[in-house]
Length: 368
Ligand code: SF4
Image (tube, rainbow, N blue to C red; front, top):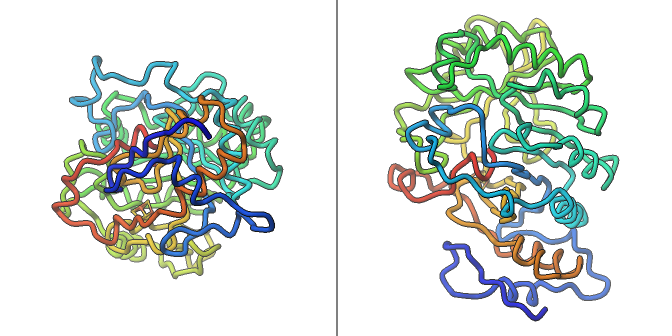
């Protein structure tokens, strides 16, 4: 490879280039690229692809209006990876062991023609678990086409059933009823099981925990309650605003008794709990109080083609530069191997008030 691509990850102190890492990680004959593990022995399993940094909501914990206002410099179109580039990178990740791909954003349904991307990803391997996280605002319109394109499941973010609370949290006065219609349309299209993600922030929506659990009991949908995290640098996170997973479980258990269930697979993010009366299950994501870095097998591809190996990273590795410099597929795969092999991330294990203030990439750019 002729061109040296600077390694832009600020966490790496020496100025090695991605080019050098690629050469170190090059595979010899007979070696299986899927054997690649990071510095803590974690293998690649999940790839999250952000397809846009834009969103039609301004959720207070993710894209607060005072930061993401009218003048916010979102990425220009030429900076975004094309669908062809995304599919080419995704194919290399699949060759390295990825079995699950999640499209995120921003709001992924805002990327024009996203169904075509789903189709291209589904063509990589019919066994791939392809899913998408959405705020549900335009899901009703899109659900059928997404399903036809090869999407298997969908996760809908929904922080409250109370209309006033929901409108306040999305900060664009969007009604909860429209999101519920989107969930119904997704279910009718066969995008099941539907997961509903609820970030719980103290003083904001903890009164919504039981109504949400109750509303989706018996529906086959799985509500997953998520501890409020210090994502990005703009959400003003404080530990006393975290409603802990233990507290969430206690509150639900008081109304509708639940018991813990084993994980579906090693590395599953949500702890599973099922209703004793057989009305289904919920999940709890204890990202703050019970870090799950040890089993974290997720890589993230940003809208502009950087690979991040942690949600709380400050910077990523510029694959777009590599892609557009005319590298071969083998070189591209080696670059990914190199990035993964040097990974040592464990942010949630070392989180503190000080790390919460450290610079981090915004979730709306990298995907949740
Ligand atoms: S903090 Fe980083 S390494 Fe830990 S679980 Fe989250 S994304 Fe994975």
